[in-house]
Length: 389
Image (cartoon, rainbow, N blue to C red; front, side, top):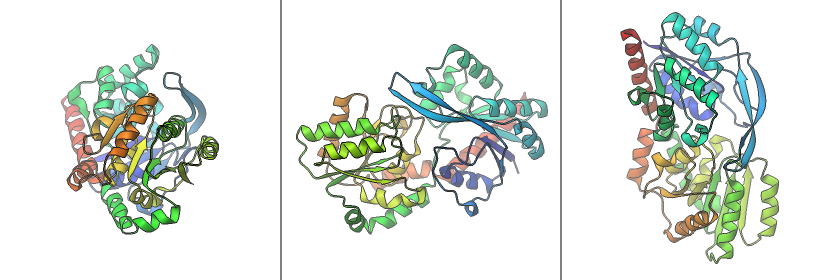
């Protein structure tokens, strides 16, 4: 049995199903900097995990990421630990998977070099999210990728970034993202039976447009509110509900916006734990994530698997994979007129969910089991490639 170790910064709930599926196929461990971060409110059920987790005594600091080109600034947390190499020596994996272009990967490469073990770099960034970095950081990344054996990407957009660093296309394994599509899909379907009651309980009327994410500048919630406001002022007639799931720094602004626009029904339940989201996806009619900077947000996949058509931001790394004529409409959230045009197109489409065959196609490809199969094949290729060198 192949022994594999994932070196990551934290454990997100949506990764657990993939890691569990992988643990059924390989000797699999996860080495983490931390379980969560300062801006993450999710809960994890420890008894759901069948893979061992090692949490390092990491150091961390908060910094500000600024994107003047798309107009946002936000706090992020950076982690690093001196223990990664030692943990890998204790576990003695046959292959290491590491994320980021930083300390975790450098320690992993040191272990791989000294113990003749292949290292796979999981890279989620896109040319939009990471292509703007300076020459020195870009040089460091080119050196790092030159030492890795294989690469995991979410899809074409993240593969494009890897290719720009000099990675060979044949060394990239795509589709290395997903969720427990089976459980998620069943949970939403179960709640469809209570759809009318859920809508009545929350006061939803007419077409319900759902947003699931942080109420932050990067996710574009103010852009969404302002586009909806313009759409209504220009003559939108149908009953409409804007449903915002999440919390964040723009909550107060949105409360004030709602008072200025009493004709637009706004519902904000606050942060909702992942396991409590399905009723809202069952109650909604469309969804939108007007992000201005995202690698591959899984909320986009959750929306599709729930059968909801959606408005896809052009700055969403998942758009090239998930947006089709059957699943929704692509638009530019930074272009107000294009945003309003997308809302008009949404309003012109008759009510209805995405065709079942389309949902099944995406659900199968992005399931935890399919992702684990792709990971195992990547492990085998990495080991064979390393042995042949």
